[in-house]
Length: 489
Image (cartoon, rainbow, N blue to C red; front, side, top):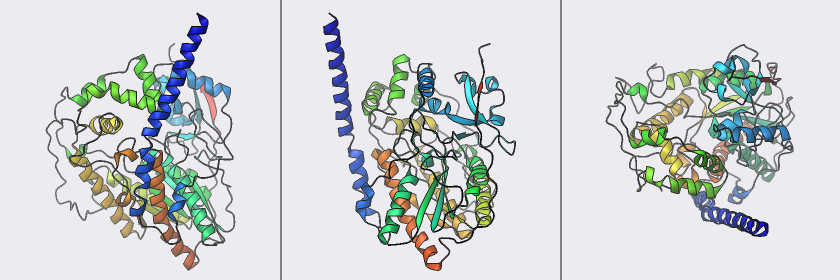
């Protein structure tokens, strides 16, 4: 009897593994989807397309995950409030001012009775957290001494180096279980390009991105965390976490039991939660999740039905050539531009410069998706951005990039038009803003092409690599500690 049970168990395991490999093979079109666009993306001088397939070297700071952390990760996964964000949150150093009393915090009260925290030097609650330094999380995130994703980078600037810091949110740091973020690819290809050009220079890349933050957080991160590292160039890529059309709608429609609301309110059961968590790492789980949800979404993959509303554009605001001083700029752009002023001023004081990138949204009027394979994109647009129509989201995404372009022109900054060259191919996206691993690689490739001419200009005029550096601010203390609490008492 036991022998038969073991035989069945082994057979099921082997079939599951085989099915996973089969689905991954079927989904390998993501890789082909990325490569088919390479010929359409102009190459920077001295770049070869064969480099696209190159990965960065293994991270020397990758460590074994402590057994205690693995146990905590399993505890969270079994708690009923699991998910990649919840799992990742246990291995962040939270701003102690932001946390306050964790049992009174609307989000952190569900933590499993313990958190890592740090004390912000300015006593303010921004940013809400940092990644733990010199750590490898159970999900796969590897950080250096500054809590930045990626390899070690020395504090003191080294001769003949060019240091580039990438600031932004989740689209900059990338999914924690992805092998690389787009800044890591950029660093690899820049060093390959320098070697091919026989340049006596090395590039260092800092990825200061982290998920769920906004421009106000980014401005503080620039001041407290990035500025002490004296970057030559700071690249800003973000355009989603403050993207809200609500200021353009004076009266939102009354609540209706739309498809979006029905799906949003339907909480997954035990099996659904397990499948949801597995879907972030396993292709087979994603397919099963899509199949089980097929009855909840339009079978043709088109936009879900939206209630009527009227979009009211700010009076006198030129949509094609906007006045950047207007406080009523849509999608919180006035706030974002003021925070960019702070980043730009901070960077300039260090002898560096800011470059501003356009932001990629996958949305267009009349867009039709595969209702199973692209379920996450459909839910992001029809639930996460409800009740707004695709055409309005696309209109404001384009407007946001025009504002970024004009801001760059007015302040004589380089504008890196990533959105112009990134293909609108859903197979390269997890949702409407986050890329698949190959989508992340392709976005990095586009950024690389756009950065090379900028770098060549500075190499030619002798400003890079810098030989002297102005005094940098003292790095903010960063000593995480663990706190425990019991919110059930």
